[in-house]
Amino acid sequence: MKNIEKLIEPLNLIYYEYEKSSNSFILDRNYSNEHIFEELIKITYLLSKNNINFFVDEKKSLVLNAKDSIFLKIKRYIASFFENIKNSSLNIYVLNDKNVKWAKNLPVIKIETTKVDFDFSKYDAIIFTSKNAIYSLNSYNQEWIKKPIYAIAPQTAKVASNLGAKIKFVSKEKHGDEFAKELVPLLKNKKVLYIRGSKVVTNLVETLNSNGAICDETIVYETVCVEFKKKIKLPKNSVIIFSSPSTIECFLKNSQWDDSYRAVSIGHTTEKYFPPYITPYVSETTSLDSCVKKAIELSR
Image 1 (cartoon, rainbow, N blue to C red):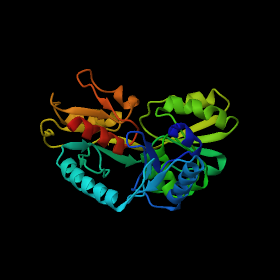
Image 2 (image 1 turned 180 degrees about the horizontal axis):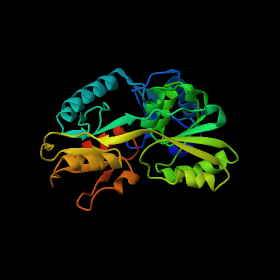
Image 3 (image 1 turned 30 degrees about the vertical axis):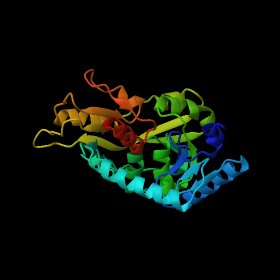
Image 4 (image 1 turned 90 degrees about the horizontal axis):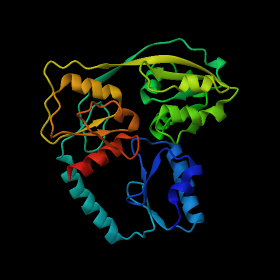
């Protein structure tokens, strides 16, 4: 059996994610552009070249080492129907306004944009470690799209790509400090701009500036807590997804933690910010979809 993860590494996929448990490439259906088709062609060519059987299902995901038939399509439809009924009744909460299948929204943070004047002509590239930085910047300035983009993770890269930017590099790491180490050889002797929020948990700028790059940084948004009139009280055994250190701070500011609750952290960086009395489960990847999958596992 070929190592699929190793095989697809050079493809630098952002819209398709390989899921080992189902041996499938899962498409993020929140996006729709020509880049998705490009990735599909890349994957199918690679699989065919390596004599790996696959089929494309109704959701445009690729199922490996399997054959399709009318019977299997019906079987998948029925399984999906009952799965949807079962998972929709679960008390899974995402602490922002992003729509994620099977999760309920409970926004405890809000993003306040800071308008800054830019001269992008001075820079060879732009670095993003946050989707919110892209959204905030793009709300008043679209000149950044002309520059090569270095992104920390597929979730951030998707947003930039969907807005028309050219993605030069997507990190294989989930933490800013590791991302910085990956960037060192790529950005040596280049002048780059790191666009970020007011709170960061990385030494990215220092790492690049001490290793041959010139890295400036600019803050384009601030994360603030939503103020609730009453304390939040969720149902017993709820699974709560924390996607940043700010969501931990703002949720606990507005709620009393119940021992029946379970926490899912979007990554190991966020995991470090939980108080001692909460032990979170960490998602497989740094995406909200992955967090919801983990939450469903915990609810069974």
